[in-house]
Length: 175
Image (tube, rainbow, N blue to C red; front, side, top):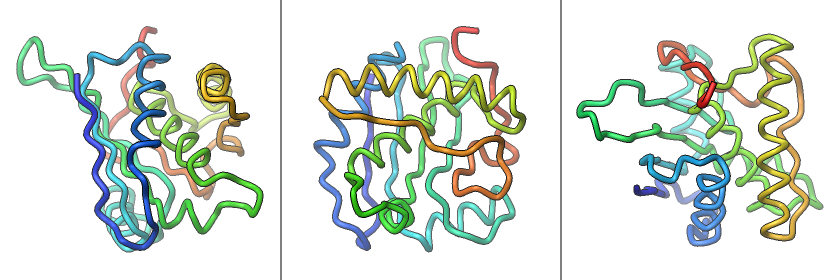
């Protein structure tokens, strides 16, 4: 099915083709190629607004994932939407980091949220971190990069926000 990649910001130049190639590989690795997926690149102001509305946190962040759980039709395969705070991600990049690698890692994290993974507890975080590591190792082999999952443990004021309140996470895909 389709991958829609939209760039709704102008704060940071984005080349969509490299990001699209990597997200398509991620979908293949995760076995979700038949699902529609939206990736929306936004600036700090827009991601802050979305974060405030859905999570009651008035701050920009790196990723927000909105899973799609109720198909309108039996053959409706829509995984959901991932909002990448590309300006925030760019500002958080360290000097030696490749921006597209960090975007890829962040998109992977968002995909895991769409598949039902969470990190509210240490046990949840361990499962999610393990899944991200497995996926990123495979992707790294394919693209010749060393990709590491987002750092940190259970959500406690970190940059990553996960699934917004009101968008309950489903059980992990395939569980």
